[in-house]
Image (cartoon, rainbow, N blue to C red; front, side, top):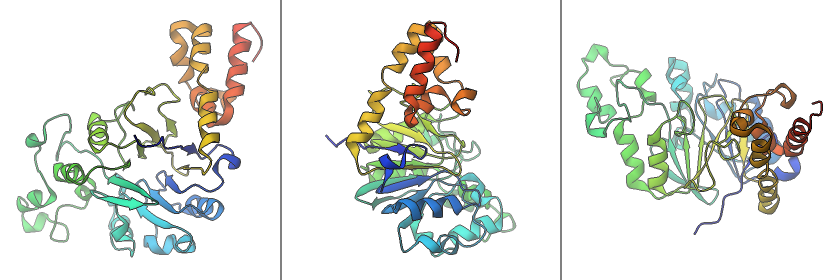
Length: 314
């Protein structure tokens, strides 16, 4: 059995994340400053940008200040094909070979699989079998298009960030992997996809990390997945990051600290416990109590629950 991968959300203490091996960054949307600052601070072995990068200059230029500190990888998001500039600054960058979409690459000692872009029903609705997809591959789509309909003699720019069945199948053929990075979310997210779960399980990954929805989500801590799930999943917000700390014992302890909270919340709220844990609260800086606890604030959440239980003021 593979060892449990210890993880940490960016808002946890610097003590618990002194030098992660690998960091995942949520959708930059043109602002790479948080990426540069985090790499300079933590100096990970490698980073992965989770799509919607929309860099204003070629990516290798934007990340120039840190390319001697870390290895940079990326997957595309749906907005990375919004304009010619968005596209060219990624696919025309010197870091084009670091695009993980449809590939499995060994990074910082782990096999990382990448699935960029989004599902678009005009191409493939993943709730349906792949054989029912309108197009199996981008080349199959290109062959149906008139020359004047093509963009740079290929498919439209927009659909260069669409997921085709062949992209998905290519990853399945290339497995196994340790980590799956995607732009789309797994099914635990309200707008996620079972196809992401199925891919993760088929590859045998322990970890799924995604962007796209602009939320920091620890699916286990927020009760959206159980510890019995075959993999652990995180969503990463724009301007945020998820990293591996070097001290797994402290990481394990921090997650264990919050495991009594669902039981305590049930004592206080009964059947409404999960709804309370997953509802943003002003006293937790607009975060959900579950997320706030998972990010190091479990004592504050516990104190609030005890106060409510005993009729105290919070």
